[in-house]
Amino acid sequence: MVKVAGTFEKDNGIRLPVSDDFLLPFLSPTSPGSQYWEGPPPGAASDRQRGRILLQLHQVLDVLERSGVDLAGKSLLDIGTGNGMIPRLMLEFSALGKAVGVDPFLDGEHQSSWQPHDRDSLFRELADYIESESPGELDFNRYRHLTGFEHFTLRPGRIAYKRGGAKQFRFAQLGAHDLAQLNEPFDILYCKAIDHISDWDGIFRAARAASHDGSLFVIKHFSFFAYLGPHRYATTNIPWGHLLLSDAEYRRFATEFHGHRAKEMVEFYFSGLCYPRNTMHQLTDIARRNGFVLQASINEPMRHAHRIQGFLDLIPGFWDIVHDNHPSATEDEMLSGRYHFVFRRMA
Image (tube, rainbow, N blue to C red; front, side, top):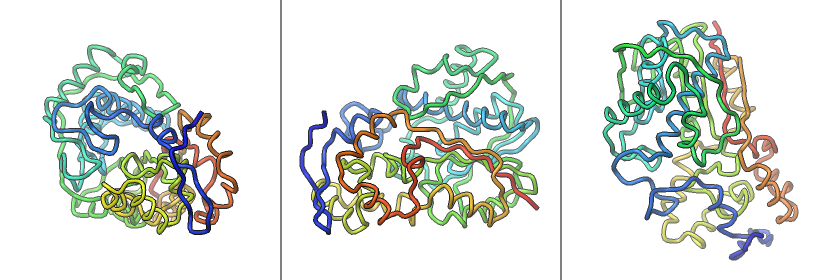
């Protein structure tokens, strides 16, 4: 039973229920002593962060294998690499030849960035963990206890590996629109954070400049239209509040219910996330216009989709409000957890 703490009145007089019960049970836990909207403090990675890395590594290798990709000698560009763990571990546990990771932010420089930590130490720890706990193959059951509250429902298959020797990894502090500055093409491009980047046309133009005919562009994406689409920093405690509120109403809501951090909340909502918002249909259309054709698509439902659907009945006229604000919104995207796409660059 949801305990409603208050209501928020829209500009047309409709009242929406407000309660932490709509939000807190669906957020992964933060560091002890911190608020849910705060980033982790400087220091070693938590078990949850380790589990996220292992899952991301496993998922991208699984998607590539299912797409029939032979990684032997191939080059990878990881766009929005964060701390660089994914490309470094891919080099270590696959036949990939070389990898470059780019990110405009260093650790601790953005609200969604990794906290300052020893990257080399974390890499060695994770690599040794994989080899000791899951020898010869990546097996989800060997690290599932670390993934905790991750909002996934599809588990990657077992991936055989031979731990490789020293291979080339390079980090460049570049944004997703500046890939031409690398002045080299890659066989595989990977991006897991386009939800934080505006101008998706610009991303695909940059991807074309950093690829060649036949290159693959692998995208892992958390849709804005999903239940927690604005991420922990800007999600409201109204069910799908980001779809029920106009931009002006969102600003007013932040002031009324999150006044102590309203400025930061609004700034992240409009500047830390892709704006204007794009649906997955629009994503594939933007890719096509820039010469990338969809080869594979997986919609991974949110783990708690069956629970959050019950909130729809609490808001009279729910779909009318959503479609007035976002005509392209669809129910399957709203109930999604993560999308996995593979695009192929055409001539």
